[in-house]
Image 1 (tube, protein in one colour):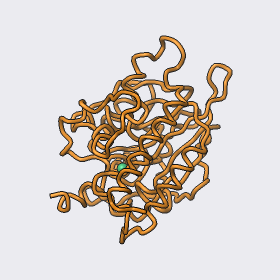
Image 2: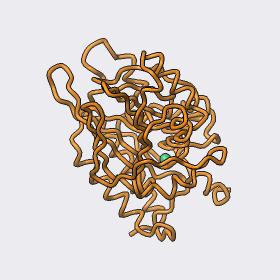
Image 3: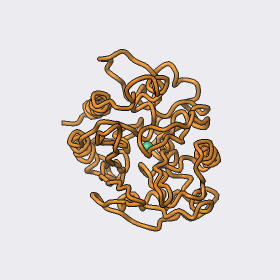
Amino acid sequence: MLKIARTAFVSMCASWATLGIAAAVAQQPAGHAWTQQEVFRRNVGSREEQTTAFTPHKVVANIYYVGTQSLASFLVTTPQGHILINSSYEANVPVLKSSVEKLGFKWTDVKILLGSHAHGDHMEGDAAVKQQTGATVVAMAEDVPALEKMRPGDKPHPIDRVIHDGDEVTLGGTVLHAHLTPGHTRGCTTWTMKVQDGGRTLDVVIIGSAGVNPGFVLVNNKDTPQIADEFRRTFQILRSLPCDIPLASHPAMYNLAEKFPKLGKGPNPFIDPAGYKAEIDIAQGVFNQVWAEQGGK
Ligand SMILES: [Zn+2]
C-alpha cells in the first residue's frame, strides 16, 4: 500500500487521504518528539483546511496572509504592485483572489509570482494566476524540471524568470532574497526580507520546507543520491538565517492558529525567534528518525 501510494505522496506535500485526522495533531506539548506522520498531517491538514480561506490579515509591515487554513500564501504589497508567494492548488486561486480583495488590494496588481517549492499544493495555480494577473512567474532553477511536469488541465507551466541561490527579487522598494534550501524538493526556496516595524528592522524568513514526507527515501535514493546531504545543508542554512518573524509554506509550521487571536492585543505575535528554532528542531528530528529507520550511517 505504501509502495503504491509512494509516487502520490512524494509528488506533493498534501494528500486528500489526510482528511479528518489533522486536528488531533495540531497542538502538542513542548518537548514532544514529533513523528514523521504527525508533522506531515499537522502541515497539510484536512481537505477542508486545505481549501478554506484563513481570515486574511496583515502579518507585519507590507506582508499579508492570503492563504487557506493549511496552505500558506503571502501578499507582499508595494507602491509598484504586489508580489504573491504561493499560488496554491489551482482550485484555491479564487480563494486567494477573494482574500486579496477582502484586504482592499487589487488582484490584477499582482506583478510577481514566487513559490516555496515545486509541489502542487504550493505552485499548481501558477498558470491560472499568470492568466488572470499577467504576473511574472519566478522559479528556482533546480525546481524547473518538476514545475514543467505540473500541468493542471494540460496547461504548460509558465516560467518567466529562472533564479539561482542568492538571487534577489525586487519590486517597489521591497527586496526578497532567495535561499536554495533543497531536500524536500531540489529547488525548495526559503525567502527572506527585512521589514520596518515600530522603528525596528525585523528579519522575516518564509521557510520553503524542510519536511521529510512519508515515502521519502533518504538512504540509497536512486533518483537523488545526495538527498540526505541536501537536507543537512538546508538545516544548516536555516539555522544561519537571522529570524525575528518565522513564516512558512504551511501555517502550522509557525503556529498561525495560536498566534492569530493575539493579533492587535499586544506585541506582534508573529515575532517569534524561539518558534523558528523550535520548528527547525522538529524538522531535523524527523529527518534523523527517518534516516536511522532507513539504516543511514
Ligand atoms: Zn511539499
